[in-house]
Every structure is written in structure tokens, then in C-alpha cells.
Length: 213
Figure 1 (cartoon, rainbow, N blue to C red):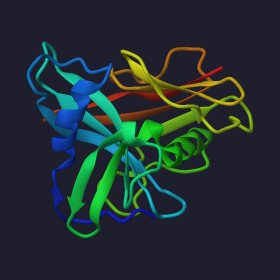
Figure 2 (figure 1 turned 60 degrees about the vertical axis):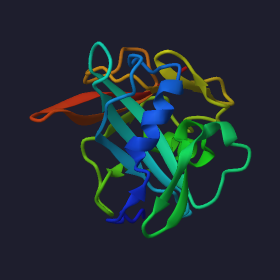
Figure 3 (figure 1 turned 180 degrees about the horizontal axis):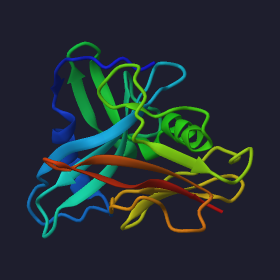
């Protein structure tokens, strides 16, 4: 169970993403720095209790049109060997001390738990409340069991998503650019959908992840 600490982060997650997001192939902002707001998301629990796993939705007002990005992140108490290119940055946590934040699509712990979520073996948890399920997150898998044979390959960024392949030939697509839609297009094996605060009084919903044959 992930424990959510009410404490300080220096720099904050949004400050780290302000520098990191413009380096991504799927970033759609203008030449100025992103104008980010943490707008929603959910967490997954690491069975070993060592790695924080968060799927953050960050909205950006800097471009020609507002954008919503899905940013899976992992938080570790020590560097992840061989993942230097996946490092988003480091933070000083008021309770846990120094934390290394990584692009979660390149972290094997997040990958494993994301597949477990699609299969229905684990439950999405609230982003900011300890030990509380997030019932806005839904998942579906129609491909039978087992879902995949792992491990997933190294993540590849496109202009819309991050793609990972399984050992048995399936494609897992993490949708980086979120566009409101209640359900995925037909033909996917499985999916995860979630919600975020689009405006002060509006919740938006979109497909976060899809699994393809």
C-alpha cells in the first residue's frame, strides 16, 4: 500500500515536468515554457513497497490550444541502474529524502503493474489519498488469460503515444496526448480509461492505455 505523505517536494513534480516535457516527441506546446497544472491521475501499488507509481495528467496552456498529457512516473529512493535516459529529475522529499523520478514507461515496476491493471489483477488507487481505490479509472481485457508474456521491450515515443511490445507480439500503447472519449476504438484487446479536471467545473474522460494484438 502506497502511503501519501502531506509534505514538501523541492522541486515540485510540475517544476520537473516543465523542463522535461518539451524534450518529448509528443509534446505539443509552443516555444515558450509549458504552463502546467496537475489536473488528475491515479496511482498503482508496488507489491514490494519500494517504488512510487503515479499516472499524472498535466494540462498545458502554453500552446495554440490547451493540451492534456498523460505522464506515468515512478519515484525511487536510489537510481535505477541503466535508466539514465529515463530520468526526469531528482526531488527532495520532506519525509523520504532524495527521490529519483523516472519516466514510468521505462521502469519495469510500472510496466508490470500496468499490465496487471489491464488484466484486472490489481486496482487503480486514488492519486492523493492513502489506501483508497479510484473508481473513475476503468479497465477491460477481452483477450483471455494470460494476457501477455513479458517482459515488455524498451519504450518508443511517437508524436502521440509511447509504444511497448510484449514477448508474444502484442503492442501496449500509452496515450500521451489525451483526447476526451469514453471508449477506445474497436479492435483493441484491452484498455484503461481515466478522468481529470479539464476546467474549474468540468471533468474530462479519455482512454489512457490500449493493448493491441
